Length: 188
Picture 1 (spheres, rainbow, N blue to C red):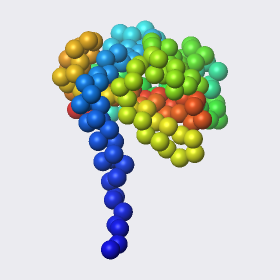
Picture 2: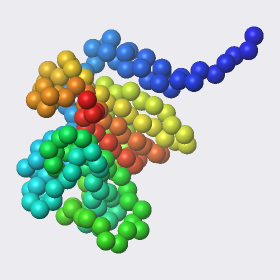
Picture 3: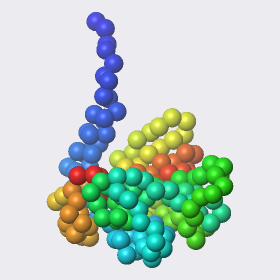
């Protein structure tokens, strides 16, 4: 008898972990919704931080750098959305090779929950709770996936007020240091 590798094993395992969380009635109820003063799907906050002349077009990701160019912030506007209506945030370290870049007057990008690059898994869990699916990666890597789906949004009403079905947050760590943050609404 020959064992055949399962091609979608990682997807199946993640699905099973997510279902296990649902059965435990574990609900991610206090998600991050802003970075550096820019609030999710809030045009006014985008224009206040980026400037009234800055119009972020839909169906694209716009990249901005911190004041010291050590971090970068990706702001994604979904197709069909109003200009500057950010639905996904992505924070990472920059390669610092770019000269003429758009910058935001902030030395580091931090969410309103106080999550920023360089913090540990313990600090993330203290701020967001234990309703996550962990996925081990290679070489001391770990990914924490938080997810909020309708109808499990009784506390913040974030999904209902934004007319969106799913909010997700992904935190990638290497050697217990946060290296990448991505959160927002999945494209419906």
